[in-house]
Picture 1 (cartoon, rainbow, N blue to C red):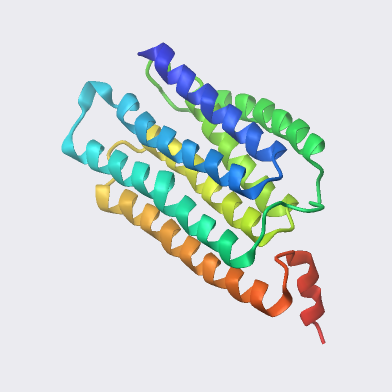
Picture 2: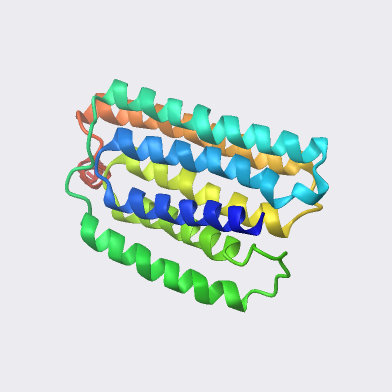
Length: 214
């Protein structure tokens, strides 16, 4: 089972790199959807020795929200805004992938410094989760399109979720699901904001919001 967990984490890291190198928004959303479903499966794999109804509930909520609900909200925003690609990001795609590799290296180092005791076969979990957190932050900062930034928020939450699943085993299920629902509300609010930004300015480039200054 350890090899399956490692494969899952490698897929998570590869999906992060893909998000950094892709410009087509629909493809990015599909990758984020895959990542969400992957984390739902990971929840079960990480606790295969002690599967309980609580773990199944957390995995199911994660799988549905991250794999289907969040992506569908973003696809709807794309249709409303008629946006297809991230145009002229602050950091180019080649440089973004290089930055992603650097973030992975930093995550490997940070993972070794954290005083966490993980089961065999889970040594890649923390580095992969930290890479996902850093990827989300990078997308929020390095992209101009509001949809890409919204996607970055979801990826950031994915990384935090992965860390929580392996390091905070005894946390209440209500708290965990509450975090996921908070993320869902945030995505809905962002979708509304994106719609109004596009209706008012006919674009989604957040750097052009400087025109609001008096």
